[in-house]
Image 1 (cartoon, rainbow, N blue to C red):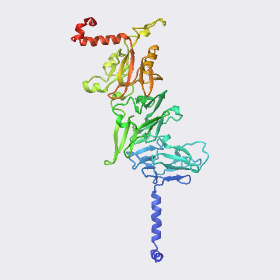
Image 2 (image 1 turned 180 degrees about the vertical axis):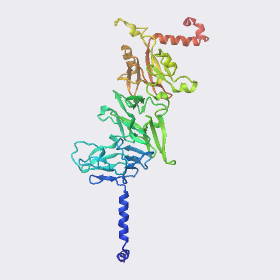
Image 3 (image 1 turned 135 degrees about the vertical axis):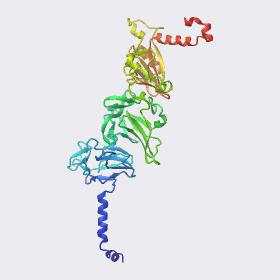
Image 4 (image 1 turned 180 degrees about the horizontal axis):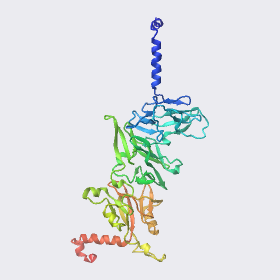
Length: 456
């Protein structure tokens, strides 16, 4: 009866055939593609949970086509393949080359992008997207990973993505988009700098430092202010690699290096159905690398409260160029007004006792760049610095150890919470003069009236 009923509709099989052909043509999202398959412009590859998708997209205010990975919608693109070689039409295809690499081809079969795995021992490869948003090329038989997109990120840090220094042999960095409509490689990059046990995150404008996190210690970047709740316990450091490992996240939490060189933490607002910015690396002009020059400190809070300039020379230092300084161009920095005691001692056999150099303590700061690391307790750090006339400052942190500086003190920022303490080397007379001024300030006190000799 069913068969006769079906045969009574001679056009039904044709209709079903055409419908299936149409669905296949527009593209059903698959979860894995093999070396015998390809993805056309209208088709996609999805993660098992369906949250991440690989396919072709067009950025806002653009006509170019790119291959990328997005989360749920094309408004949340987290990775782009052919960043510098866009397609001008919808003729593109994602497929496998003869040597097993995943490639993006245009209508003329020109390679616009490739995984570029060299010396592959097999052409039997496949590709899929993990539930973490990682595109991975594997050897189909063994399941061995040959390449993945976390090794070559674009502008976004997803959970489990590692940013590493060149010491690891990979040097994984983020690179910004050129602008919000152009995902080609922009001017800014973000990476890890490792000097001994001192690990920091930098943002560069081409080759020039633009922003610096301060040293990593006990789960936080010590030079980042106002953001402990935004990232605390969200990153881990393992063998020179910083990776995003949030303990608790919303449905979608990412870090993005935007086209203006700012690191942003974004989260998905399900009510507004869009990404919201929770934190940005540039809170003030004090976050611009070296804005105050050498031997100066930047304090954005002082400008907000009393209108003072954000930059000031450290105690014992004066501006290199007074006119520029008064015009609020501070990049020329400051120089030492009184030479150090150790510099004035000509005979190296002379022992410096009561008149030895002293240290001025600066509390809760982002310590300067170019620190040198060594082991030791705080007193060891101090004595090592005093014994070396080239040492101009030191700091100690339980999670790092000793840090010392033998050159200019560059990129110091006053923080309102956390931060480290640094001890700046001065001639003892500078501190004595400071104490004398303090005593004169309290000249009407009992102490000063009873002991006026201190004020002479």
